[in-house]
Length: 144
Length: 144
DNA sequence: GTCAAATCATTCGCATGCAAATGATAATCC
DNA sequence: GGATTATCATTTGCATGCGAATGATTTGAC
Image (cartoon, rainbow over all chains, first blue to last red; front, top):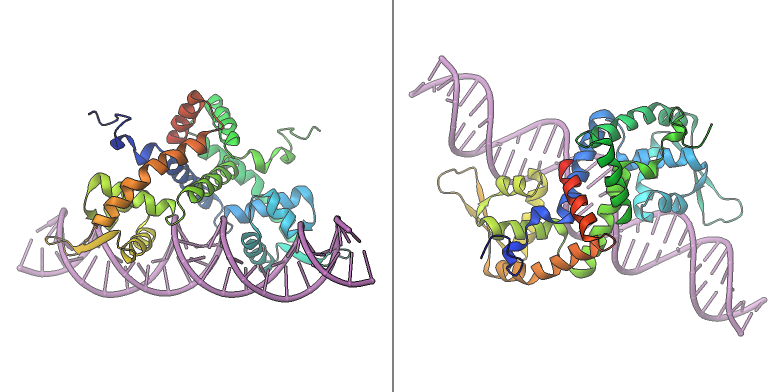
């Protein structure tokens, strides 16, 4: 009975499971992010970066774009609004919607952070060759 | 000026960044996990699975094995203890340490869950071929 | 042996992240 | 048009996850 006999549940090694590795890889990325951008979290930056791309949108729509559910996006946006990086407004036609958009300061902040974000991506992928990095992104995209 | 001109910060596409994709992939995995194992979270299962492997250990040591900091591991262990899946005890020699080990029920629970955990891994990797899955695990391990 | 440094556990505060419930508004069906 | 359904936002509760501070104990330097 070898340690990785598949018919033996010793063959279940936590360290080799995709979920465990994903969690660890994500953790390392967040740590690298924090070491470069201390005053903003990855989700906060994601919200700002996406708002820069799409301009004003509703909270829900923004959430769909950055993969956050309604409850989460509300918290993120509230914190960004409290810091003056984001502006909230009512939708004139559909009164259910809460419009979100960058303030001037938010705009400036994103522009400044994008180069750092590039560095963060680079550092996260540093253990890989360019070819490996491309493969990783492609495979990860398939399981999203 | 094409949309992905690298000399232009429009070239920063959130969707293509490793951090964003890692977060999404992890989210999908957690959702798959929850659909198969409703009454335990991935970190809780990780703690049980690792305790099965190593037997009794200190909280800190367990944390190192499953990549959780001290504060996080305490919360996870407390919840497992409250459910009777884990037993706590003082270390006789080193009085700083808090020993953690599986109870009989914890043991039974892990044994029952391992097959489900295999299914979860399979389903998470379902969009990939066996070869792609192996490559993904290998590349992810490099950036952990 | 004693004092300083390291280790272990705990606690607090803050930030995701999600499920479920609620209320307001809009869209659809008839 | 009126009732049903769907959508948007909010709130609550729970579970990670981490930084920072604290206290207890142990180890190491001398």
